[in-house]
Image 1: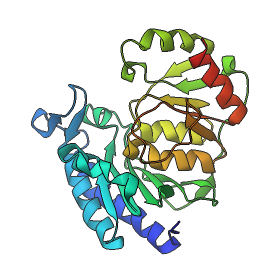
Image 2: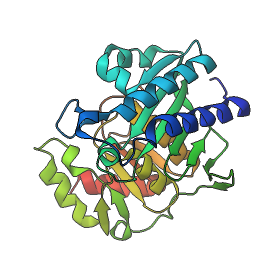
Image 3: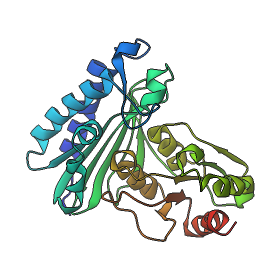
Length: 276
């Protein structure tokens, strides 16, 4: 497994800042109908900011990692075969140029940028940038998970304390589950104190990794949404796995990913969804 040096880690953060300043922030609150397109569904959007930011990040990250497979969300949308190569890649960089595009396109400041660096099938660096506030969440294996403020101040992240599931707050995007499964999951939501979704993995991972929310259950496994966040959550002390019990890896494209404060909480939440 390849290590990511401090210098490269900082350089990638700078690349993300520059891409946000050049391509994303100037377009926020200025998105027009002409700058929005749909992809797989009417609410699956792509904007000029997504395309411009991914182009800039791809160029910058290719310079740092010339041997890497670059897996950008928008590149995969245009050529799905890129994603099929991730599982066999020795080294890869995964890019989500604007996570939370629906929010961004509708003037809501809940969006972010995500980069995950993957070596030997494992995420060795995860970075989430929040362009509006200028801060980051960041992690590398064995080094903890950190909030890095705009001024560089670093604060270690910790997940929520375990507790009864009836007191837990969590994220469950019910609308993203198959229609035939939604009634079952909807009934299970009554076991918890509060359930919501923010349509943005970047902010949902921020909340579960910092202890604001207790858990998240995800209906889809897209590597640009989860590869960085799962590492950050783990390094913040959390436990995550598919509902089947399998460990997550970035090449997975099917399954239900559940993140919780610890293994015992994870099992209690899993049973609430799978056993009713």
